[in-house]
Image (cartoon, rainbow over all chains, first blue to last red; front, side, top):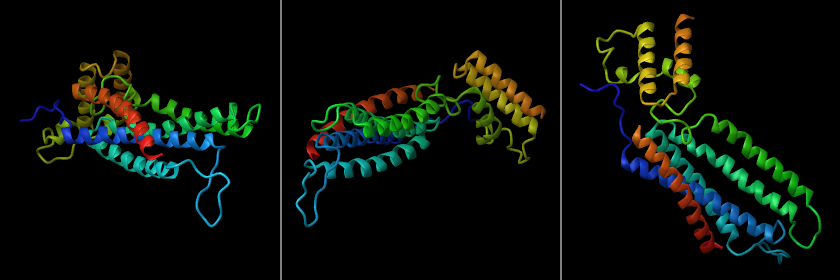
Length: 232
Length: 30
């Protein structure tokens, strides 16, 4: 007989590969940033190859670093998302940080070039400043959205936790409960009645509240939403 | 729940290590 409140612990290989993916994404974004800075340092653009002698050849290894950064970053992103999904509880949502991280560092790099342009030009390079501001905005707006709905910095984590009370209540009403998954309440083969879903939802909410995953206020709000949904 | 707290902490460590590794790898490549 399984305890319905017990959830499967993530496997160690899953966690290690997930962390490897996260570290890989961080490494890739770092490489892309450093490669971008190296190009900015020689004037913001460069060229190699072809039948001509380039007036501004790329710094050594930058093309390879960019390639490694983007391709390696995408592979690491996929690994982290895949293993994050296996871990559950919103762990894969961390990979969404790659977007604000990438645009944030590239935006800051452009702002640096805008305020202190490459070469000997005095004053600001407005092209870089404006592009930098756009990039930073592209980073910050999704970051704010992520911050309000994430697993990394939220309250205690769990299979259905790490979200605000509203989405949690919605998920509770639709996801199969641990009891259902364990073949408990529906073992007689009958379809679950709406009342069963409500009771399951209330039980899961109470369990989350009991483990401090939900504050008193969040619990009360989610419970009220669940009951209102049942009345509708 | 406890293991998720530990994983969250390890995520922050992984990000820090990734930045260090990326800096090192860029030094090797470029």
